[in-house]
Amino acid sequence: MRFDPPLQSGVLIQRYKRFLADVQLDSGEQITLHCPNTGSMKNCAEPGWRVWFSDSGNAQRKYRHTWELVQTADGAMVGVNTGRANALVKEAISACAIPSLQGYDSIRAEVKYGSENSRIDLLLECPGSACFVEIKSVTLGEGSTGFFPDAVTERGRKHLRELMAVVEQGNRAVLFFCVQHTGVDCVRPADHIDPAYGKQLREAAQSGVEIMAWRWQLSDRECRIDVPLPVQLD
Image (cartoon, rainbow, N blue to C red; front, top):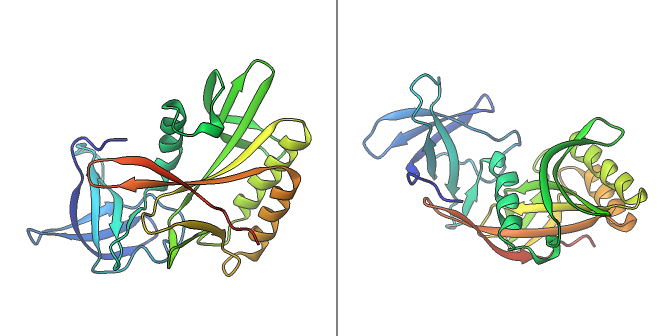
């Protein structure tokens, strides 16, 4: 995924009201960004850190700029726009960059399914076979370990239950961690934040839900798939 034009940058002053962030540009001007992240943004929203943002070019929008990236104190780049994750994964599958998710004829997004009124992020299909892919964006890094979730998530547990039901019905189900953090080299459930999610994740894995993680490389010009990462459930 390319940013065209390249992202602009500034220094974070504060994130507040969940979806807003004030940034000081290098010119000294202060602007307010839309922050498209529903999580806590733990360890990726410290005042004084360098941030990058896109410009919609729409002067009618109240907040025309969108926060995309942040650079941590140790130099790692983090993609804080969690809304990008589905598009990044879909693009990678379409480009045949994820071998274990090849062999399907079609990709559909946001398809209704399940008994709990859910929508699957991506549904891969070919005659006689279907693969349900639920995508989660990993932005929380502690050392070189990425954790999910960064806040308690009942919705995330619901998605795991739905994937387990998919397996019971004889279909393939995948929980895909889209790691938008260049400093992370493995992924673990955040038991210290949401132990119930960690428990449900392990149950899902035991039931046959496939758990996988891939890291993305991030810059002000593009986001591109990098390497698969181990998911540690022990």
